[in-house]
Length: 149
Image 1 (cartoon, helix red, strand yellow):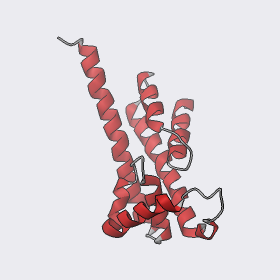
Image 2 (cartoon, one colour):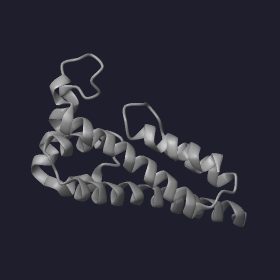
Image 3 (tube, one colour):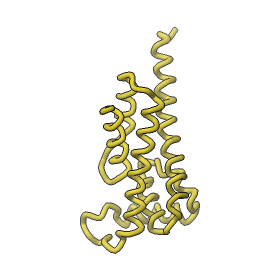
Image 4 (cartoon, one colour):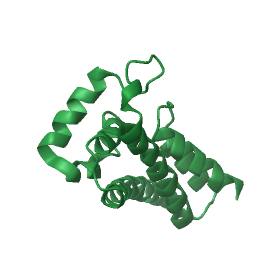
């Protein structure tokens, strides 16, 4: 259970300000023999809940944006706002992106996107990313296990 909780924590942190890469934890736990389905579930849940923190910050904490500790600076908000203005709520399917994805979730809160729609789209995008990582790992493990010719 500790491995799954550790992955949840890493995925949660990766969706917030902290410089984490939960994919590394995911692949390490896969290599250690953990259940891929449960890994996907814990990683998706942690990363989506971390994005929900950004949403809440966008919705409720914008009046503190001039503080040095505030997570999103104008240089990050501008591109995310333009992306969100162009693609709207559907841009949240791209919230998994390493650059700008976290800002998109913040912008969704700022724009007062309906929370459950935000949550569903964000979860779909983030779950899709982890599914791709799991699939790539499975393909790679199959090729390596086959010995090559």
